[in-house]
Length: 345
Length: 279
Image (cartoon, rainbow over all chains, first blue to last red; front, side, top):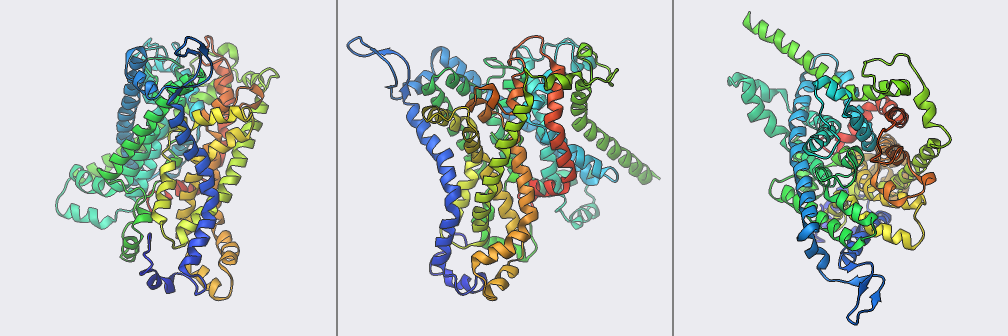
């Protein structure tokens, strides 16, 4: 029913809507109702995307033109901003930020999956304290990332409680590898419970019969988890992981507030672009932002196409869905996961 | 006997697991609260309870030179107005996607969800330039408009899920009884969808209240800072000898209302968060 071909539309019509609504009328109404949303998204998403692309081909500031005069304002520099990214000092900084962004994503998301799934299993089987767990799991989610960054900065100060518990004297928030791990820990704290929540929702859909059958067949706990539980929660998990991944790829607040700007160990692509922009080097900043956007788009594409994350399944496969609903099967996954990733940006 | 043993140990394992989760989630939050209630002179004290209990940090947060009330008010204005517009536009879009048949529905849904993945920095840089040119820096609209970029897709998806859950027959019956689609929407759908809209409003409000990078970029005047930015700026981000106690107190002030709301509506919020995920 998604992209109803005109020929098939009348067939769907009678059970769908009252007689007075023709498909054309529906289309007009749909266009009318969607206009405000698309106007806003056009202004805050499409315009910036195009403007950033244009901006990334210009460079601001003083330069000398061919005849040796000082020129102020923006100059068209073609792909210079992009080629500059990959070479020399700027290149080192870019590749470092690119590496940090990628590593933050891989490491944090992997740890969050393991902890999140473990939490979901405990919550699913817990006999007592379910209400308490459900309440406490929402607390890290509700805390603003900027506030949690300051909280963890405080926990990780030199004479802080982390060093006291570990009986160590690590300079967690100073430049260096340990700062990277401090950020990973803070990020995991905030978002693993959320993955747990989504996986739990997936677990609750699995019918007890499946486990009963596995038990009769003599599967042990580990085998049951690996062969039954995990494959069945995979759709929910995959979308949660996709959105967490995209969220970490654009990570900004946590390292920015917790560790600081221009720190080699934790500088992400977002932070690099922000730093360039705040120094009014809009051209390079836009180039970094565009590279990040392409990176995010590529990762999203890989998830959806190769791993089969069913992101817009709900809308795209409505026909199949209706049939499956009739049979009482699970609906495809749809990602309100964004909500919870913590920082939406 | 042995099965009994494994059952008992399993039960113990679950209890321990529950305890670990609660500790994991609440211990850092507890530390924020404890640190906030210490005297500033006890800041380095790592004991688990504040002794003596002190409100000095809270007084410091509201001292005239910090002006945190103003930041809280700014956050409230930005989050409320964004939520209002998000609900208004989002309800129409979500209803359309959930209930109407039209060509290109898949594309529309795809575009809206794709915008949710957009990295914030990519829209901030061009908008920062645009807003500088039209004199919008240090205004509420400079924070509200970009915030819609993540709030709106989020709200559309959550609302669409709620709309789908409502029985189609009610609306159809109303239309057979002679109501127009618009009337059916206003008189039947909206009242029924109210709980879902309320949940979406809470989720949106929290997301915008917690927003950082837009508020940081679009404002350079202290009086227009939102609460999250103000807290991070209490000393300058890389300052030494940070007044952590004051920051923790400000953190408690910003967070506790959210936590209270979240705990009151926890069932709804979990439904909202996972509604899309699975049904």
